[in-house]
Image 1 (tube, rainbow, N blue to C red):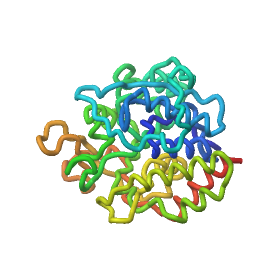
Image 2: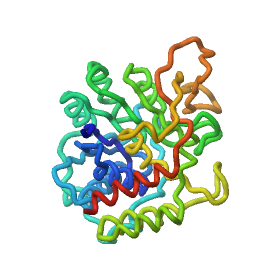
Image 3: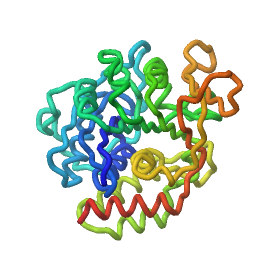
Image 4: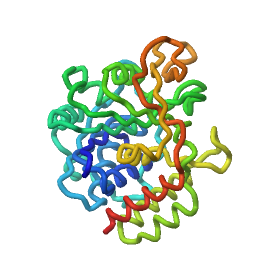
Length: 310
């Protein structure tokens, strides 16, 4: 039995890999892909998502463009992790890739109304927050949110904040406060599942256009890697973990916790405050990933890409 999902993202090579996993996983039914500004400007994320869906070989999956900026603050753009290294240099314009005419928030709402949909997010939460603000009743119609973002420890953009949450903290606060079951995959919780040489080799061995595309995306991520929080030679897989955990939560160690987003701090704006111990006296609003089974994650990743390729 498959679980219907909608994937909201900001591709980016890592998001593109997550789209491929979502499209290929035997336990998932990818109903739609929505995009917004994040790693890149909204036009580029929409185009990259549409190209990725096309290269997956899957047909009938709508791809929509959405938020051009955060709800409140000025836009941040990373400007890295683009797909140029993994796509034909003659990049088509937006009209040529055949985007759905609906705004991402509208497509999220329409998909959720059909029932039992899990929303998987691997970018800023702006589109989802917009949908919830327009239609608060969606809180009762979305089965679960699985989101890659935040951190319980150090941030990866500022000392306190992780990129996806920092791009739109106000949107994240709306989502965590909506009363929808949430699985949060913080970057430190996902860090132990890395992009290893064996993962790249196994992906490349799948062959065909899809296997080669996925392997090239993995290699391009490694090529942009800068030694950081998780060691000089460890590049976390990150975004593809979200659809994998949505399909099989047993890949992760989950701990219930209260998650709030800091909106006022001078130095901590955008931080996810994760209260594992219940010190605030408020009930948990998320299941937080604190570790992954790397071997099983890698196996599930390769299986999803192989199924898509075949």
